[in-house]
Image (cartoon, rainbow, N blue to C red; front, side, top):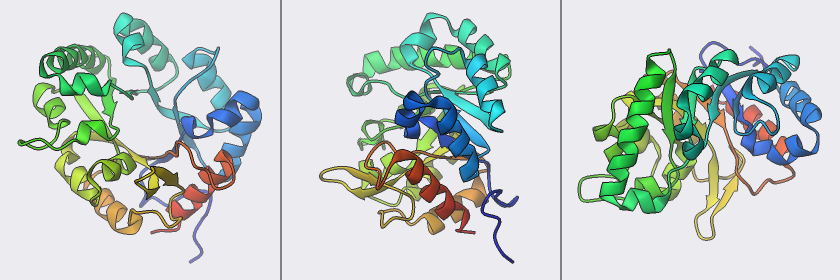
Length: 260
């Protein structure tokens, strides 16, 4: 049977594009960029930045191109100022997953400061959960520094109940230089979303499109993940596009849906 290259079959979790990947194209011509994302075959996106638009306004623009936001990133410093106002916006846009994409490495290395930040994040997570929303934290490499007890990210697991993980498999590989499936298995019960990015080299760090001679065996990793966790898969590539950001998004998407 010929695979449908536009609409993945029901064996797949939802596949989205993190719009940070195409931030240059969105800044150049937002409508054209979203049209091309839709033409690639994406039906879901994760929001990174809405520019001068509110989240509901940006959500309406996405609808024009048959795109649905499944989650949004928000800077922690902005979120903590007025969580309820932000929650009101995301609910109006039909989004139920909110992701904090960064907490400074220095905070993760300071046990007292980290405990304070995680307590605050837990309170925000509890507030979100009461409204049918969820809070997740997106890892980079610094949270997966090994300790005697495990990893720094373990502290999020032990000190919170209402904060999930958006696991970035590419950064997990960068941090450990091991199969990121090991990290996915470790945190499986708390993973709400997966970021899929591939790594060409560590020194110097170089990203690449999925299936483009990167370090991660996606067939193996994703077969195991989808057997254990139905959370959405979000394609993201920070830099190092082979041609341009939209072309890289297309290549990664087409590779991903060809796997199973």
